[in-house]
Image (cartoon, rainbow, N blue to C red; front, side):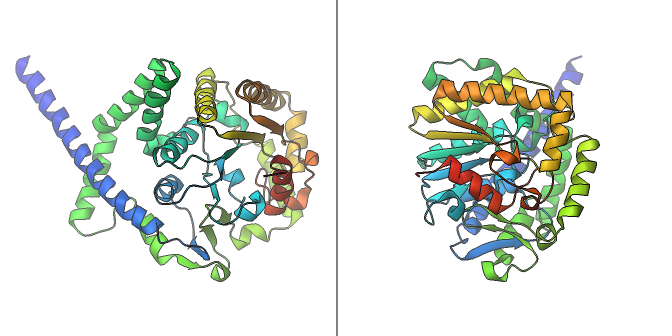
Length: 368
């Protein structure tokens, strides 16, 4: 029995050691990424094709930007909001939106801002109903897990809230990262590529942030990220006809709308969101919360489906109640007619154009 236990301990020790070395190497490359993020200046954008690691990008940018007055939190549905739409002068607005961002992403971004002393005056949250669902279990936020754990430690102690169960959960997630065989395989491949002089994880983003820096006027058909974190959609997305978009919307919603097809309320997510907003309010941040609009055809279909309508209503009721409790303003803009926005104001089922978002944000921040 003893030799088996010793062998097992040695194997686990080796796994942890390799993963720790890989983590150290990743942190070293993160510093290089921050240096690349600092080169993004007014008038320039990061142009690219396909996808970039938005969490690594935002992490790097939040380490190097100055203190913004207004910060936007949310999923890809808020990413089109630029400084001009927010009514802010350059350098005083930052869009921290990320694709499929959830409560844990919000927490990590706030932790990064607070740690750097960049607490904004106003935080605007574009909250999708599905961020409160157990069905939203994609662990994209795990790259920012240390910041989430830091928030739970600091905010829990500050507010006198134990948050013990959630602290233990995140410690377990982090421990699994170091003990995971899948992570070990990835770590070994990554270290081997580094030794061989080949590109490693994160290097694609670093390359994009250097080779992809161009003037905004020169973006052309590509997509891009501006210095304030807002995005320029690719030309193919901007140029689609309203008829084509409507057909895709109907097909998409009928086949099971993203985030709502498997909506399952999860109280723990609401508890973490409440802890975040209370902490932000305690730091003097004004909170503005809204549920973003859907394409008119999508909204009609969602409202006609009892299950989807109930999910949206449950999320709305919770967000409205929590907003009242913490002293935040809340607007449910799910119905595009409430803004108003028409079919031509949408790229797809749930992504509104800058024109639509401008009208909404003028309502959200009328005097800011």
